[in-house]
Figure 1 (cartoon, rainbow, N blue to C red):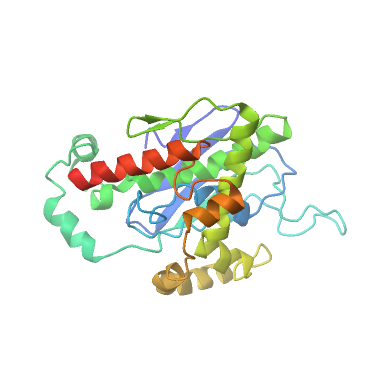
Figure 2 (figure 1 turned 180 degrees about the horizontal axis):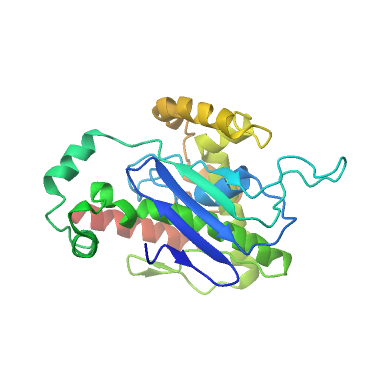
Length: 280
């Protein structure tokens, strides 16, 4: 499919769909010898995952990645210390869909030939015909950004080794603008916000901090655990600690929802979004 591959020296191919078994990102052109873990990739994925706060989609996908190919399964020679390092071959990252609500499939089947404003349903049908993946928007779903984030993390890690730090924050939301912030403060804030999200994400704590999934496990071992997690999604989500805005501000120096380095602006953004949501 044209449009699922990008890059020359650093190449990314993405695949999957919102209601398929999952999504994948295949990265080529990365450097060998790069230590990589699923936990650190998830650290970026949790910043875009849905169902995390009042401003995001209610779908509760865990967005847990599995590195399927491209890493050394063991030290190449005894004592080399390069287990779980990239070996220069294509790196495949799988992101299973664990929160698919099959009751929604019938809803999509009843309505997916009525184009939705702001969606790609009409363009998808015109391009691919009646066999296009119209369940949950398929390849055009917002879930697709998870593959881009996963591949982007690899690129960011390579750039960081070259002295280039890549990060982001919300500059404007709902017509509320963030005042100018210098680079150092913005970077410190972005890192603190990321740490806050890790500490308050029940999947990060349950899966990685408690060691339910580790880099020493084989692929099929991880799949077995993921099958359990699929049945535990609501229970794990129920362990989400209360996000007290005052405690979070005092401990991390960040806003509890919006990644904006000016906390007053972040709160104004949140209030503006809620007003828009309330009025339709």
